[in-house]
Length: 145
Image (cartoon, rainbow, N blue to C red; front, side, top):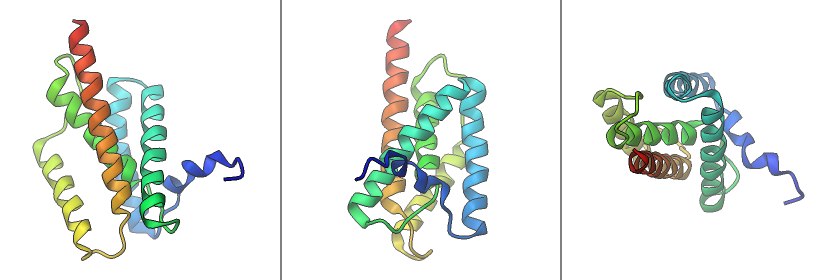
């Protein structure tokens, strides 16, 4: 509100416990690494920044300021890779089906409330942005060929 625009992104760096941090680091390493290797570092940085801002804004707007973590970005990367794999005929990026199933099952489990307070709106917004970005870039790349 006072020109501190970095606050749109910084919640992705806040984690509530070692396990929370560890899971997000591992998923970022796996999913982010796949994007970085098949595309480039700038693409990954852009994805992380835009998905991070979108997921943070959704969580803040709908649930308030008490949240943190990179899970919205992780779900965004999942959605992006999934759509690239499914619709981009030239994509070299892929995920094994059990990974997609596991992450979507965890998404649903988080919504039940059984695992404590979760930034579900960040997860949802991240996933939606990643799916849309992955689908739109896949379709535009296919149209150019």
